[in-house]
Image 1 (cartoon, one colour):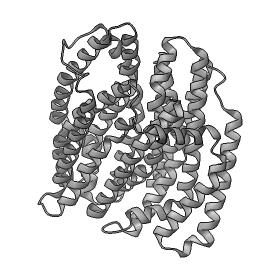
Image 2 (cartoon, rainbow, N blue to C red):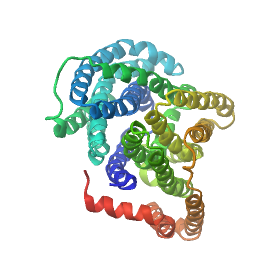
Image 3 (tube, rainbow, N blue to C red):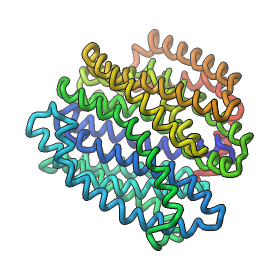
Image 4 (tube, helix red, strand yellow):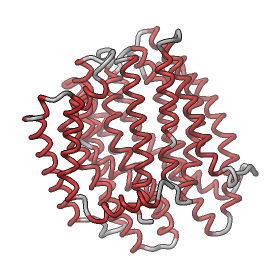
Amino acid sequence: MSLRGDAFRAALGTMASRVLGLAREVTLAHFFGASGSLDAFWIAFLIPNILRRLLGEGGVTLAFVPVYLREERHGRGREFLQASFTFALIAFPLLCLLGSYLAPKYVRLLAAGFPPDQLSLAAELAQMLFPFLGLVGLAALFGGLLNTKGYFFLPSFSPVLFSLGAITGAALSGYVSGSVYVLAFGVLAGAFLQVLLLFFPLRVTLSLGKPWHPGLVEVGKRLIPAFAGLLLSEVNALVDNRLASGLAPGSISVLQYGMRLFQLPMGVIAASVGMAILPRLSRDAIHADVTSLRRGLTDGVETVLAWILPAMAGLLVLGKPIVAFLFGHGAFGDVAVDGTYLALMGYLVGIWGYALLHLFTRAFHALGLLRFPPLVLGISAMANVGLDIALVRIWGVFGLAVATGISGCIGGILSGALLWRKVRGWLPRGSLLRIVSGTGIMAGAIWSFDRFVGVGLPEFGRVFSGVALGILFYIPFLGRKNLWAIMAGLTRGAA
């Protein structure tokens, strides 16, 4: 199966999980609005969620997959897998206990602007939510193993269960005293079901053994720069929330809603291509196949940009009616709609940079260039902090979001320049012209329709008519390879 085909199958699962994730945010907006209790939940969930990306979807996957493929090639794959699984079952629970113990201390640092009762609520929720890290960490380990065996749909689909748990918790919150605690319990229940779903196809493959193997030393060496780089990237979220806690109530929630819409194309497109390309580039690097590496990078860059640029343009043009349609009901008022759209516009400034950075980081880890991701992300994080402090005084929530967007542009450009020094010739110049032209024509068509026709339609009709028109105008510019990949991914099925 081609990279585009595997990425498309991953995108099918990711689309389902992101749509349910969006439904989760819509449900939270309906039952909680942009409220102080939801702000407390987001602060409580921030550190477990960041560490989930560090240990789970980010660090462990990046470190585990290349080493596992190397050990498998030398006939040591089973022993290495046993040691990794056993070690994870020991390490994750210990980490969760430590995090729950430290929760009251770090919450005070993250939300110093909260009043005492809200701060106390956030600390209690943080203690309750920290086991989420262990559950999703195991799910990420299982997902990375499935990727090496050619399974991309199921790992990308599995977060659907986490979202369903959160939706159920939010829906039940209106019937139970202490509603935000019910939401936290739903999050944990959904994460547990996600682990079970991914464990099922691996139940014969996974077994316990000695919690040690020489390959784990290599994983540890790879985890250090992976953690450093990903931790630096999370400084953006930490600084944003710290500064937003001193703005008007609901500012943190507005940023979260805007980030959710921003992450929809990022998750479906960038994460799917990154999931599919990491095992490929790792195998090519093991065999020192420079030609295949160059071809894989070319396909990856073209595929990412062919989808992320039109998504960016569509959200910029239709962002406000989309926000109003999805969130503008229940406790979510017009002021929150305007704030969420402003945050979304700021984030979208750098969506193409973040997408390329996600791809290039996989390439760095496959090639063993472990010092580059922390360097790039450190520079981007420093730029973000400086811009946050400068722009929040001028534009408030929008200033925080646009600072994050600009830091993404810096990261994408810098990582591409560093990768070019090691592997040249992967930039798809001809395809870029086609993609940019198609995106511009599509955006013009949507804007014209929305201004002269869509403005008179209800939000539902305005959004879906604009999306359908955008797809119609962009398909001729998508490219033959991408169209064939869609057909091949559908005919092969959701493996």
